[in-house]
Length: 74
Image (cartoon, rainbow, N blue to C red):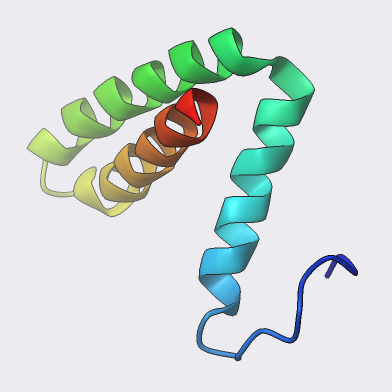
């Protein structure tokens, strides 16, 4: 983990890792591209969620897309 993080509890580590991944994508692509990418991921995740088997991949895609959209706004 980065030195900017204080000690994180083991059960919160996945959320911190996901947020760091979103921040890295935002830093690498820029705000506008990250917002568009987040919207595309949300749409793709919603379409996959319609199918029962695709819901396993679709729901995390919707969450990742939503986090990208939120992170690109703020």
